[in-house]
Structure formats: structure tokens, C-alpha cells
Length: 233
Image (cartoon, rainbow, N blue to C red; front, side, top):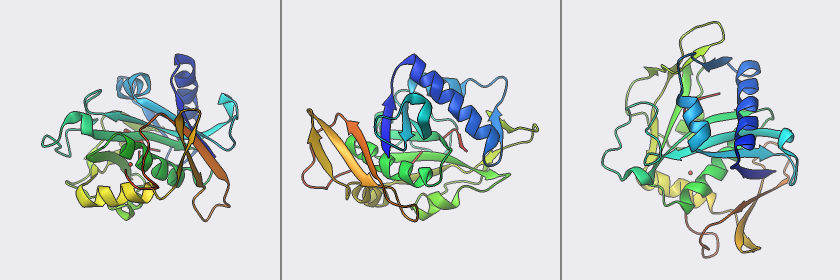
């Protein structure tokens, strides 16, 4: 599998189309409200990452993806959790996670750990859906904590017009460092002046090689140091 950053307007538009398709056909079934522009701003100004089964697959073969932004670029989607004690540049919000293939979410979690490490992230915020379906358990397993009760997500609704509730969650401090270290257990290797991240698809899905080119400082051995808000599909 390959993690690929999408940068052009055409690539971002294709990602958005796949995101809509995944949200309408998989899981709870939901979409942005008619008035919301939060998702549009994430797609336009966030760091957009697509996942492909094979290296060099064309754009139309993406099978999943997510968007990351730091709080110096865009505000957090909901005022909780309170991260005012940290520099905005060091806090990232992860979201718009979608997949059309089994195992993508776990792949995205590992990849995000590496991306966050390269950016020296101090905290990761996510807003997984908890109603009408609970998607928060996987983040709890990764040591994300819930600083408050679930909140109604004002920017989305189910396909039949129902409310969506999300659980604000955060990972920081020692638990974030542990998460980062686990991501960097997967090796970086030099190629054409960049860093190539290679790792196997997480079990129980059969292993296959994954490559993501990333321009980042070199890390000694495998040491060094984030998953994906908007409501997670």
C-alpha cells in the first residue's frame, strides 16, 4: 500500500468525491449539512492524504484517505478539548477518514503517527462519531482520552437528517510519545533525496508493502515521532 499526499486542486476534488461516496455507502451514512463549509475548508487548506493498494496506482484507484491540519492553519472543529496551553502549530486535528477497503483505518493510524513525528506534534485531536454508531473505541485503544462528554456535531447529519454526536478526544504527553515511537518502529530509507516510509499492512489483513515518499529530516535508525476530525466515517 502507498500513502500519497494530494496537492493539486484536481486531486483534492477527486478525494472529496471519494469521501462523499464512502460516507454515503459505508458505515452510518452521513454528509455535511447544507450550510457547513468546515469540510470544504479542510479539503482546500488541510494536508490531504490518499491511500492506494499499489504503488503508482492512478488517482481513481484510491481506496481510503484522511486530512490533517494544524491549528495555526485552521481552527479546531469544536472548542473542546482545550489546547490553549500549546502552540497552535504543534497541535493537529485529524479527520475526514474514509475507506473502501478493509484495514485502511489501521494503516492510516500508523501513517499519521509518522507524519506527526516529522512535524514535532505535541497533541492530536480527533472527533470520532459516537452516535448513531460508536467509533471512539479504536482511539481509546490508542490511548486517546475524552476530556468531556460527547457533543452534537453541528456540521454534519445522517442521510435521513438525523443528528450526529461526536466524542472530542486528545492524545498528548507521554502517551503521544509512545504512539510516535511505535510509528517509527517502521523504517525510513533514503530515496531521491527524500524519506521513504515502508511498512506492512497491519494484521489481520494479509501483509503487503506500503511506500510513502515524505520530505523530512533524516531520523537515526527507527527512532523518533500521529490518527485522523470532522466526524470520522
